[in-house]
Length: 171
Image 1 (cartoon, rainbow, N blue to C red):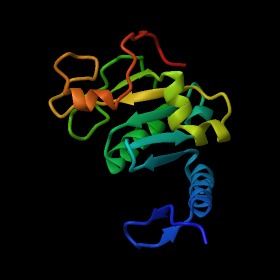
Image 2: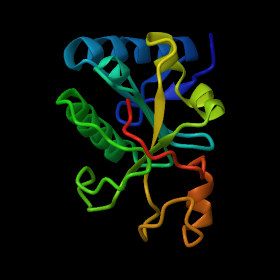
Image 3: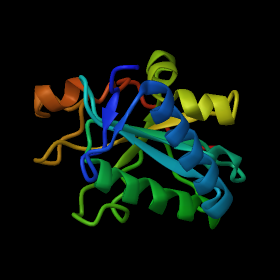
Image 4: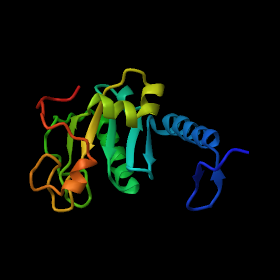
């Protein structure tokens, strides 16, 4: 028998890697059928991260990737972004977006480095090959973004942020 790969923290049910990947695929398919997209949160290992699958199919849409954030919080943030993209709203790269997060923190969209995109959002590439992925960047607890010298260095290193911001409407 295969070694357990994942244990559900709520039910304590154990899954092999193959079973767990099948569970994730089933979730993505169901979410995409019901809502148009899915948000996958991954916890454990060196990083906690989340990414969308299917938002790039919205007109002028793109997939989102967020690093080093609470899965419950980022799922809400990404779904809010998805609803606003679906309504036709446009966001600029590097623009401070203050009305998404409930805690009043500003968020930013940044270009997602290709190596980070490849490593952390594989399912998005499987379901929507060639999709554009933008990184949803959050500030540290004091409100500093990762490229600000005052940002907590431990927080900043897990954001994988490119420091050159290209300001333009995202499409």
